[in-house]
Amino acid sequence: MPRVTIQEASRILNVSQDVIRKNVRDGKLQASKEGTRWMVDIPENAEEYSDDFKENIHALARTLTPWWYDNPRREGLVHYLESLGIEEVEPFFLCGMKGEDIWPATGHDGRDRCPECVLEVHDQGLPMETRE
Image 1 (spheres, rainbow, N blue to C red):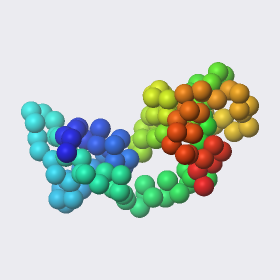
Image 2: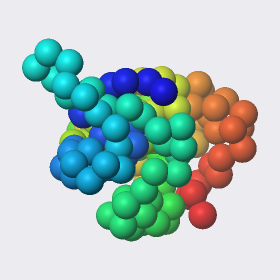
Image 3: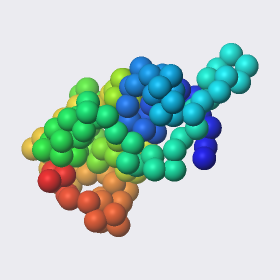
Image 4: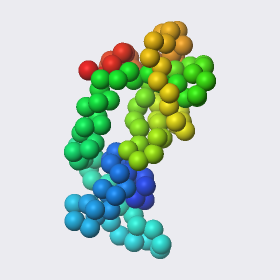
């Protein structure tokens, strides 16, 4: 089981830092203080970790385009969104790129798609247009 900071646990489990802290207090997650930081044990079933807000967000995300620009000018390649932090907009794209924010690429030209993202979509059997 990896031990990570509360912020990293929030990103990995895709729930807010407040939910992480509450679940530590309630004994649903194990954590201990190391120096000045709390370190959280990530459960083995991390992919199943959930709360109601997370479920609602994921239900909404399945209906949206998975393709997003990484810049406000909406120029260049569009990337397939792998995950998005619950608290901050900190996108992770399938190609491994981490962004600062996202802008929708609805109606983009398929030729503008990041080639690495397209390969990952095919390799992982993900839907090309929406996640439903």
